[in-house]
Length: 254
Image (cartoon, rainbow, N blue to C red; front, top):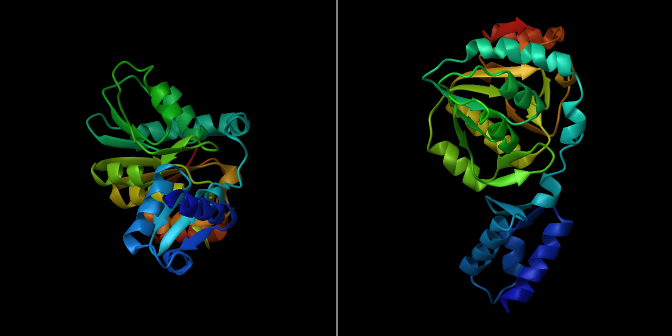
């Protein structure tokens, strides 16, 4: 019975960060490989796993972000975030395809945005709602699974949507940045989304407040060399600044 088999697989996903096809084939020798892959598709659609090469990653382990809850972060460094977004807004161009990341800094940016004819795509449902207060802004929101901690949409559907669009300017906010790890976050699924956004964008603008500097989280989505403009509210660590300058990154102090 497929219900019993899926019950076993569900228990495995609750106890292990990765379940391989090899171990599932061994555990269910009388079941075809196609059926096992359909089981993984089922758990991905239900938000329990992400299908990866060779098996599935458990969302229970992926969504441990190592960050404070969103409302708590919204209250922190408000003045710093305002300074960052005011500098970032200078790089908005009407008629361009613009991407806005998720998170509290981007929510602040959405509230400061001028009411102009801008086309903006975002992974943040709360950011999309804030942007709807601007009558001239065209808002696209990516479909997929919503993570609670960062209120961002990620997953396979999000990646498919992003692959189908062009991005001129992307405004991104890492959870940490360091010379050794580059730009990083604490959620694997969100990392995959940010990685694709950086790859597809003509201009990448990173907004980094002092709490993110010299901080490394588990998943790196790009290096310093992959961004074009770094807007920061603090003095950069010497090695990080050296890397940025050698890569030709424009550093702006808010």
